[in-house]
Image (cartoon, rainbow, N blue to C red; front, side, top):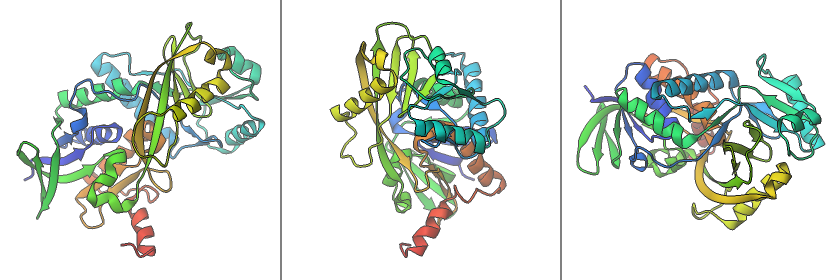
Length: 370
């Protein structure tokens, strides 16, 4: 019998959710991540849970199930940890700063299956009332269940709650090798253990795992800038326009994110800062005149060809699995997607075709690449 039901590689958004869902199903889990060995590991300062995507404003995949699952989990984490600094449930405002966007957003409200009570259309004067100082706009909509999540606090708290609850965590570099019926895990100090499954939840680092390199998961660099304002901001909601603007402290805003598909390193750049400041200047012109830059961060996210996460089994070994390519919607997708893979492994339920690894393998076979 294996020491663990699953070894989960990666303790970021997807890895923690995967460990959580398996643990809820009574499975013994080893969570591995050498980059998050510190109990207060650094991470992104804030991100938005927004069920609306892109310039069209369309709902993300299974938006209601995804958002409800995430909200349930973060509420539970707040209660279990006693922390009130994991998120703000203050909604998301999507102002239409062009007539085209206004038309897109209205079409979304008419044609998309928005759950009852989720969204409200606002006229320009109403937007200016709830968000003083916002740029000239053509109306927009307010998404009531939208969240601002303080990601560093969230990840560190999530990991602590899981390990306090019985999930084993290792901050040591570890390799895996399949032997007959399970995986042999060997860490950098020579300690060994076995696991029935290995699940790679490594995000943008997934291409570094040879078994998954052929999936073609793309790495996209993103940068954010942090600004201090000269006075307290009169609003708390998230802003989704030309990216996002989030309020972490009463006089602090975080502006994100760039989407850089071609990059040589993960360093911050002046070019990205200028673009980010340009977003702030365009959306909140008055505020931008009196801000002071206090920080800039860069990171890399993984994306798949159809912009949906990839989850499922390896074509050559059904005990080797993946949950990756979360893109810019990682938070809202995380818990529900992890529950789909957990149910598949534990109960044999089907993975939706648009998420399954097989969708990529089919394309690779058609092209003669595997």
